[in-house]
Structure formats: structure tokens, C-alpha cells
Image (cartoon, rainbow, N blue to C red; front, side):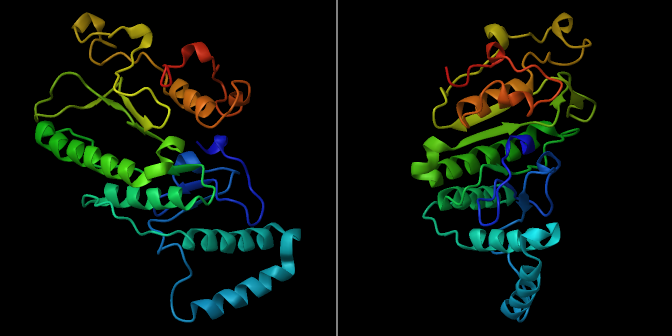
Length: 266
């Protein structure tokens, strides 16, 4: 994600946002990005905030663009102003919970059209080593309802937004002794957005790898048939307009080949 961002100058758009207390690992690097849990939280707080900002900004304007510190400080204030300009009002009713709250912020940022390219949201609570059936009902229902509200809230921005959900790791096929599953190999990704040919389950060459013991990875896990980088590459190419050649820098030590794209836009 981070390598797909362009570095802006002062007053330009914020290319990347982590809706978290700190920038997520995938957004670390030279490309500018910011992290905050909510639009109201991304501000200079406390008493006399305006006076404190004026004093800091005046001091660093003397340094100007000639130094990294001066430039970075002034760009930080520009970022605050951009985010604070976003209208957060919506008529859409979101479910409760942290995921829905983060997606509500994401929808406001997208509709605000302040130039953000990538927004990341982390979802916890999926590491089900025990009592998996009941826990999956909770988190699965929350994900579905939160995504539905987010999609409705996007409105006219649906066509220009792509949402990709992915797991950090898969789960084992066989149940463990605690009515759960342990860490496994193959996982899944869910894509939602304008231009996608939805309502399908995409498989490499259209072939399901199978769950029989002889079909499993190491005899235990679902086989991984699609490299997650091919999914990201197809979205970057079709949604963000990157050429296959340009994607070489985004995915080092990996050969990007359009023939390996899963066919999200077919």
C-alpha cells in the first residue's frame, strides 16, 4: 500500500491514512501518511490551542522549506486543516462497534474529496482458537453490517472507491480440542467497489483446491492458489491506473503479470 502512494508537496493531498492510534506497518516509509482514530481527534487540543499553533507555525515558517523539520511541521498543520475541513454529517445509521465507527470516518474522508488515496482499518477479534462458531456469528455479522452501511454512505463515491478485506493468515481445516481452529495457510479476500464484477467466488483457473487430506497443504491446510500481491496489483492497475511496469517498484522481488490477475474486473 505504502509504495503505491505519491509524495505530495505542502498544501497537497494526504495520500495515506491509518485509522488507528499509530501508522500501520504497511503505510510506513517515505510516502507521507497520517494516523488518527477520528476526525475530531486529529487536531491540536488543550487550552489555548489556537495561540499555541500560531506560535509554533510562526517559528517554523522562519525555517520554511529549507529544512526537513520546518517543511514537515508546516505540512503537518496543512494536514490538520484538510482533515478538519471534512463534513462528518450523514443520514446513514451505522451499527455500533469500532469497525463501523472507523468506516464511518473513512466514508466522510472519501466524500470530503481531500485527495486521500488509501485508508487502512484494522479489525481485531478473528483469532478463534476456541468457540469459533459463536464468535464467527458475532464478527461476521458485524463485518457485513458495517460494510453495508459504509457502502450506502459512500453514495456517489461508490464508483470511485474500492474496499479490500484480507486476513493476516488462514485457519486450519480441522477443529482443535477447544471447538476452534488454529493458524493455517490459505485464507480469503473480499472486494467491494465500483467497476468490480461482484457476486462471485474467484478461484485460480476456476478450480477449487479441495479439502480432502490429500489435497491439503502439508496435509492440514487449505491450499493457497492466488498470491495476494496479484489481487493488489489488479486493483492498482484497474482502479488506480498504474501500469504493470510501474508495479515492479510496488512489489519488489515479485513478478507482476496481468495474466495472473484473479479477474476482479472481468
